[in-house]
Image 1 (cartoon, rainbow, N blue to C red):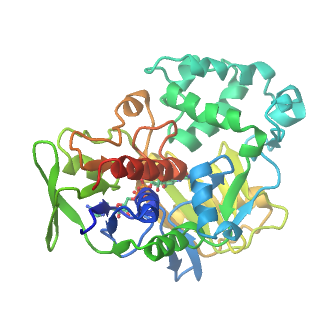
Image 2 (cartoon, rainbow, N blue to C red):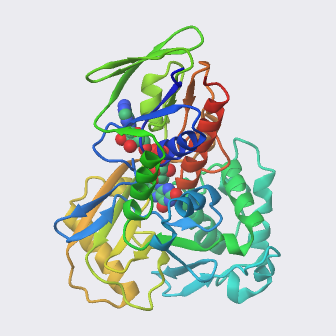
Length: 417
Ligand SMILES: Cc1cc2nc3c(=O)[nH]c(=O)nc-3n(C[C@H](O)[C@H](O)[C@H](O)COP(=O)(O)OP(=O)(O)OC[C@H]3O[C@@H](n4cnc5c(N)ncnc54)[C@H](O)[C@@H]3O)c2cc1C
C-alpha cells in the first residue's frame, strides 16, 4: 500500500526539524515545499560580493542549553562548525562609562557566582538577581518592568539587554511570563548551559546546509520556488494545497505541517490572527578581521548597536529595536556603527567594506502577543503548525523553531496512516 504523504511548507529551521523527525520514522513519505530558491528561512546565508565573504541575514548565537538545536547539529555532523565559549556567561561594555565586565556564572547548578560581586557585574547586587524570582509568579498580563527591581543599574545592565536580546522588546513592554519560562530553563541547566556558540563560518554552513542534505539523504524530497497560495479546508480535515503553478489533493491519511512564518500562516488559516507587534532589526557586517583578544559576543550598552560579534573573517553588529533607523541611509548607519566598533575594539576609524541587512519581522514578545501564540494542533485533524512562534516555553528563536518542528512531526505521526 502507498505510504501517506506529509507535506511540509517552509524550509526554515522548524520545517527542516519536522522533516528530519518524519523522514527518520519511515512511517510516511515527506515532501517539503519552499517559496524561495534556498532553505533556511530567516536564517539564510549568502555570498556578499562587496565583502567577498559568506554572511548571514543576522547574527545567530546558540546557547549550550538548547538541546534540540544542538542535537540536530550533532546528528548532522556539524558540531565542528561551531565555536563554543570555554566559559559560561557573556561580556559587556558600556559606551558611556567605559566600563567592561563579564557576567560569569559558575559551571555547576548551585549558583554561587551570585554572591561574588566580581562575577555578577558592576553595581549589580544579589537582590537584583533575587528579584528575578518575582517573574515566576507574575500574571500573564505583567511586563518584566512591572515586576522587576527598582535599581537603575539592574535595569540598564541586566534586564534591558536580556529582554531586548531574547524578547525583542524592552522590559517596559516584554512579557514577564515568557521571560520567566526562558529563565527557568536556563537556571535549571546551570552555568554549563550558559555558554554561547557562534558559527565558525556562516549559519548556513554550520546548520542549514548539512541539515537539508541529511533530510534528503533520509528520503525527504525538497522542492524549491514553490509558494503556497491557499488551503482547502473540509469540515474536519484539510483537503488540498494550491501552489502558484499546481495543486495537490490530500488523500485520506495525508497531512500538512505549515512551517511558514506567523504572518503567512495567519493569511492562510481561518481564525488565526496575525502578530501585532513586529519590530525591526539591523545587522551590519564589516569585512575586518577581529582583534585576537576580542570576545566572540559582546553586549554593548548605551550605543547604536547592542551586540558585537567577532568572527574569524568579519565583525558584525546587531541593532535591535531599530525602528528609528529604518529610513536612515545605509552608509550613515554603517559609519555610525563602525565608530562604535572602533571605540570598543581599538581598530582604526577608517570604515572597512560593509553590508547592512534590514529585517522587519522580528516578533516583539509583549504579554498580548505571548497570549495569542497558536498551538501546533489545529481544528483540522491532518493539519499542524510549526515555527518559532508556535506556543512553547521559549520566545521565537532557533531552539523554539527546532522544538516546534519536532513536536509537530510527532503530533502528525500519531495521526497519519
Ligand atoms: C533579525 C533577526 C535576528 C534574529 N536573531 C536570532 C538570534 O540571535 N537567535 C535566535 O535563536 N533566533 C534569532 N532570530 C529568530 C530566528 O531567526 C527564528 O526563530 C527562526 O528562524 C524561525 O524559524 P522558522 O523555521 O520558524 O521560520 P522561518 O525561518 O521564517 O522559515 C519559514 C520558511 O517558510 C517559507 N515560506 C513563507 N511563506 C511561504 C509560502 N507561502 N509557501 C512556501 N514557503 C513559504 C519562507 O521562505 C521560509 O523559508 C532572529 C530573527 C530575526 C528576523
